Amino acid sequence: MKSIATLLLAFCRWCNGSFFGHGIRDSVWLFPFVEIFHLVALGMLGGCVLLLNMRLLGIRFRGAPVAALAREVRPWMIGSIAVMLISGFLLFSTEAVKMYGNWAFQLKMCALLAALAFTFTIHLKVTTSEEARISPFWRSATAVVSILLWAAVALGGRAIGYVTTSAASVQ
Image (cartoon, rainbow, N blue to C red; front, side, top):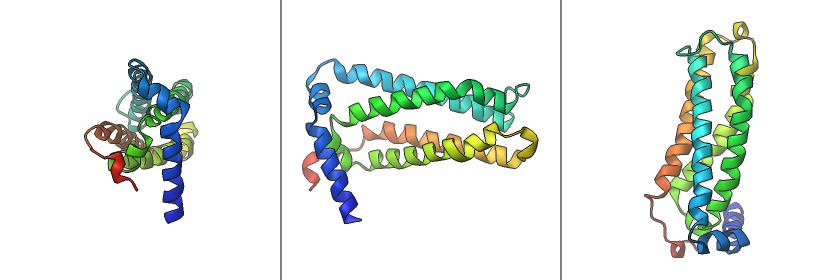
């Protein structure tokens, strides 16, 4: 476990000293510019997640088959995830060592990994299967877990700014 922590810290130090880290950190406008893309992609993803999960819960869009709705929103979800990952890495590279010791950032990353794994496995299976093959309980459970995981990503990201971590405290 210690070797993983050492590798992660080395990666964070590399990111901090990278071209991206220095360029964005030293620019007046680049950080807010990248952050705009990150937040717009988060909003787009959040809208797609809520739209699809509201259908799974039977709250809205009852006339549309789940699989058809999923097919419609999937390109938007994948595109927004791609933009979020790229812009998130660029933002991370500006304060990577500081983020290494930030529990809110660690929460966000764990939730992100779980949300991505859940979205592209169980959630994908439930939303692409025929509705008659998946019980209403499992559709609802899948929707609730999906919403909670993506909400944890967003809330973890929001909490990052409120958790103070000194880069000097990271050994």
